[in-house]
Image (tube, rainbow, N blue to C red; front, side):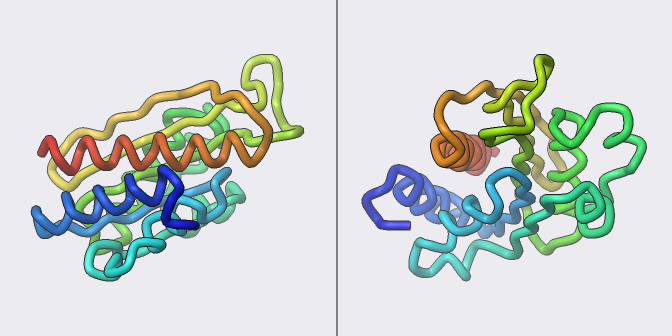
Length: 165
């Protein structure tokens, strides 16, 4: 990502906050397909504060790599706060990180339903010893716009939690 993008500046801020606490971050991504990890690693020196990124596009990958219970996916679907929570918790459990973010959604242009239209994205953040927070956003724009907005929102959530704890 070019350094002038907002996500790069947020990632750099996140890095400073994590370094100040001696923390490492992990991410679990679906609809962003690695863009969140890409934003983080666009910052020189990020190897000092990122542990691992998981791109779990399929339900099978969510189960196998992150330990998301199949029952959660069956009951709520891949695009749900419940699944995002399980992804964040799984990433934290399977990494050496102190804080995690998870993103799962429908970037489009297809795949939406009346209940979960294109642009529906669920986010979760988890920290060792802390509660898991999750939220859903309905983001406007084309596929690229939804994915970029998702990365920005996930970074903002990580940054807030890295500063608050």
